[in-house]
Every structure is written in C-alpha cells, then in structure tokens.
Image (tube, rainbow over all chains, first blue to last red):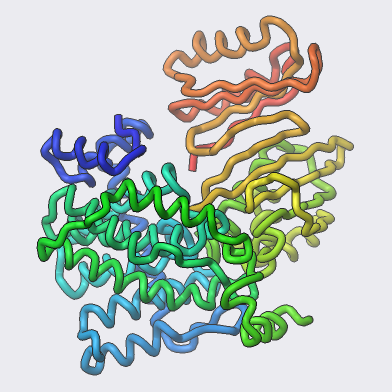
Length: 292
Length: 212
C-alpha cells in the first residue's frame, strides 16, 4: 500500500509499477477503503461534476457573497474572456474566470469541493474544467488526474499542512496550485517525475504567501488568489512540459514551506489581525460587515 | 461541502458532529462552544459558529442547513453560547464544546480542525484521545475493569469476523474509573455492533464516527 509520506516514494512506486500516479492512487484507495475501483472513480467523477456546477453557478450575473463585500468576479471575467480572450488569451482567461466563479460560489456558501481546502477551491476546477472544455481532454483523463492531485495533496498535508491557520496561504493556495500543476502535467502525458517537478515549482512560487483575510472572510484577498493560483499552476505545468526541471526537489520544497509557515507570525495565519486585514481599508470592510 | 472555509466550516461541523454522536438519542438542551486561536478571531466571517452548531445538531458538512443553523437551534430549543477565548498550547483551530442534555448528562470534547476538513479530537470528558476521523472510529466509554477490552475485541472477532482493528488507544481518568477505548477500523462495522456493545457489562456508551 502507498504511504503518502514523500513525493520521492510516490514517484518511485509509479515508476516501478510502470503506471500513472493516478492509477496507482486509485488502486491503493480501493484497497484502503474496501470499495471497487469503479465505485471510487464514480465518487471522484461526482466531485468533478460538482466542480463544474459551482463554476457555472459563479459565472452567472448577480452572484454576491454572503457578506456583500464581493461578487460577480467570475461573471465579469467570463464576459471579458469570451470577447477576445483578453491579454492572456482564451483558455487561460477562461481558467481564471472559472477559478473566480468557484470561489464566488464558496463565498456565497454554495456547494464546492475542497481541493484541498475551501479557501483554495477555485484552483483545481479552474485548471481541470479548462482542460476539459477548451482543450477537449476526455473526461476520464480529467477525473483520473484528480487522484494524482489528491495523492500529492495528501503528501503535503502529511509533511507540512494545508490549513491557512497553521501554514498561511502558501499551505492552501500553494498546495492547490501544486496539486493542479501535477494534474495538468499528467493529463498532458507527462511522467510521474514531471508531475512532481510541476508541484515543486508551483509550491516554490508561492512560498511565503500569508493568510490575511479581511474581516476573517474567505473573500478578500482569497477569491483573487485563486485566480493567480491557476496562472501559477498552468505556468509551472507548461515549464515542466517544455523540459525545464525543478531545481529543488518537491519533498524539499514542501519541507521549506512548512518551515516558512512555522516562522510566520500568528497575525499572518488566518487570524485576520495582520497584512491586508489590518490595513485601514481592510478594517473599514470589517466594520461594514460586523459593526464596530 | 458548503463553504466558505474547509477548516473553519467543514472541519468545524465534523467536530460538532462528534458531540451529536456522543449524545446519541438524548436531547441536547444547552451547548457552550469555546473557540481558540484562529477560530476565535475569524469564526463569524468563516461561519464556524453556524457550522459547529449544525454539526452538533447532526447535520453534515454538505448540509445546506448550515446556513440557518442558529435559527434551527432556536426552533429546537437548543440554547447555545460562543466564547472566543484562547486555550493555551492548543492547535490554532481549536474548539471545546461543553454540552448539557435533557437527561442531565453533561460532558465536553476538545478538537482541532487541521485543514481540508480533517479533524483531530484531543479530549473527551477529560480523557485524552487522538482520533483523526480518517478511519472509521469506534469509541467505547467503559469502566476500567479487567476483561472489558477482551470482551469488546472478542465480540468484534467472533461475531463480526472480518472487522480488522488498525489502531487502538486507551485512556482513563483514574484506576477503576471511567475509561475510553478508541478503536480505528479498516471497514465500516454494522450498526448492530454498536447496539451489542451498549448491552455489555461495564460499558456506558459506544459510538461510531464514519471516516471522512
């Protein structure tokens, strides 16, 4: 059985079994949970369907968060992206609109899939729905790639953490981008080692990111950080597919993330007492929602 | 799950759900929820209060009732109070839930939400536990007497032969007093096991928490 203790072990197991990380993870989860592989696949397919539903919901006009501080980011971005793709071009700008939309859905207390967390729930769907709809990748490959994302997510959770309160935003959006980058690489036919490299690059590129939610809400800056998380996931995956290697191995990037998280002040770990939450405007928003 | 934060909403709801399981058929009349660390500072924005309350009432992290948990609690006559006060040395997302039931039974649990909806229960009624919810977990509250553990594991083996225990932890308040067994299982046991356990000598309660 798989241990999910290190990326190195996971990659080695996939190479030894001559299979994709997703296949290995599916087989392992089937054994661990005592359910058939088909059943586990079906459950994951349901998760992907929920991701699509949250994105569609969030891309509609008039979607506001429960607090009223944010809303329509997904809708506005979709309108803009559909015109001529904007500066980033079509698949990318749509990926961003989907990430925003899923985060909008979360901020409105709608149903989402935590990937790995609710605060970072837009990143994996932004990447995967775009691969599915715009690059026309078969649904089975997309759903399978979520197992790869999940396997890496479990390693990050075991070696470091995935909670903003414990490791800052790097632990949430950083982990989510890493997971999504690895999934994208697998979808595009990359090797297990390449998936690990994409994870490493994405995590390294968000190292140090603090969790400073305004008014303690998962809205400012969280929603837009999901958008940048998608861009980092795509660029990390593309770099690896172009033949660029991660200079620091994934396991060491995860260790570094944990150390940086431990060194972070408590004010910057989801307590809404530092960073953007402590700015004059941030405080004003807090008063607007909760009063003085 | 229903947003907005997996550790502050989904995980919080699951911590609450543990209380619901412990109380079982008894009617809850009052709960006091102490929030520590990041929970204490962001609970209103993250909906942690609503989520814990929903969990206590038996709802799940994907239940839409989370949104109206306060109203539902009032309708049910469940008194609730939230206290933002740090618990020294606790994980940044910790909640301590103290409850009172119609029967007069009282108790508390302390648990942390460790990210992605995963939880860790650290204390039940003053007894240290270490339970993650990643496996199906069986709690057996019993009297610290010789043979109780053997009776439980024998019953599991002889009547439900396929059940494999993957983790075991025992804690007690004092010699011969209240004790708690925590058994992690590979597979989901049938409900009948819980009923059978509750009928056994020296066992006060048994409850099962399903894996995430």
